[in-house]
Length: 112
Image 1 (spheres, one colour):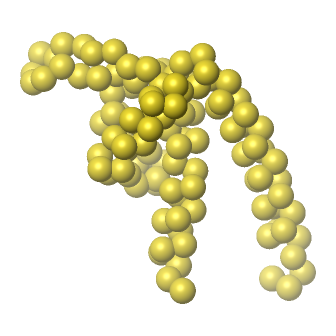
Image 2 (image 1 turned 90 degrees about the vertical axis):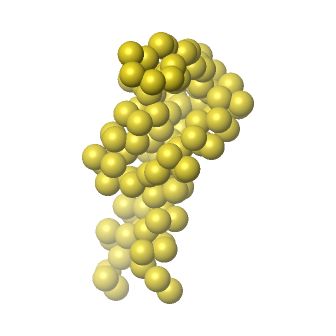
């Protein structure tokens, strides 16, 4: 089994949660989201991000607005909706439970 493949799958599993968390703090332009994810070592390309943003928007978790750009086409800025904020709160709780469960099963294993 390839460890890089497993690591990539782990990152994909938390990507939506991370995107929603970033957009909870501020309205963002997708290239800025990509930059923040890259800074956090969650490497993402546009081909991954845009379908996720569309899916989250279609689910009612995100909304967007267009802003004219001085250099090029208008830009789409995304932010969380009220429904998205509630969903993110549930994900926060789930993440905390999951993180505790993972710590219990990986850090306290005497065989390691």
